[in-house]
Length: 511
Image (cartoon, rainbow, N blue to C red; front, side, top):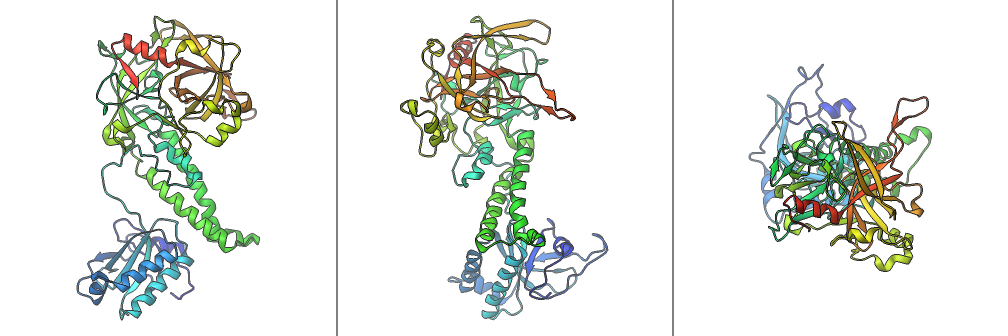
């Protein structure tokens, strides 16, 4: 293997045949020939062994270690996204096991050109320290803490670059993320506002959503202090469709940069300067790090955020509003943040907010420097539609639509739903239409049920319960069904929901 020969794809895939995880080779400083076989059974197997007695041990372990510092400096200088450095014996079964400085990097974060450079710089450092019999190999491996499950919901550290934050938001403990019941992971809704019992344990926190997000029409009954005729169930954050969409988007973003690093454009005469190459390498490193979070949560059980503790009967309430709410008791071990420290936060682009609502900027309160709006307190139901002269602007953060803004209709809507047994349920609802400057973007879409509707002053207004729209239609000359947005979105006032809960024996308040 000369200094300029790139390993074939087959060599990359099979160089470490025999190792448990079968990692891929990136680059190596040795010139020993690669032993190939006809298939996985006939290919020679490699194995790992401890280094044992060798001069490198003291030079690597003793402080200060100029060798270790030199190799770390090489990796830092080349901006390698390395995961571990191991001093091991790696070789074929039954043959000499040479000592190797084995460097692990995240998959697709280090090109062969850069890896080759790193490997030979490290080899030169080894020779300088009198370790002529030691070579350097770089392979693709990831560091795994080997815990059973990571925390499902993370504190929003804002460490990711802006273009990746919308993806990490799906793992945040903020409002508006996608949820589903564990038994129906493809039927998705939105995690709404956090509540706790009035005067209760601060570490017992519930997330509000619609009953129909967690239960379908065939599941009748309720889960209430006085009656428990409905089975409980676990609820996950990052349901199947959302996870697949996020991973697909991230893989596509990563692939665009990988193509540049691979030089795919050379065939068409494209060339890239060093700045673009550096940016693409950085993008690949950043995206790979984010993808790890979603890989760790591949199992549905690794995404459970809590369990349904209470759910209303899907029926008309005494106030003329449909009772359609569900309380999810959050699991402490599924959150990085202590449950007592949770707050109702929604990320909003503050500059966009001010640009669109300059006349109302004085109303926008509690908007942190990072663009997070804290929601506390409620808007009385009587205040929602009490004026025909002033616009009542509201926002929403939903699973499908993200953050949108709309205007509360002064006239209540009357909505008719038909229950599973054919009984019509006629209720009075508060309607919202898209804000005027948002005329091409709807207020809500399918999947936004359960989302918290909030005022610009940071108070809770209600919970999205549904919307009116044209039926799904087939695109002309195609069999793809369009998921049309709602023309008018309906929400239940927060004050009415809390009153309904109290009538059921639950005294709740906003966290």
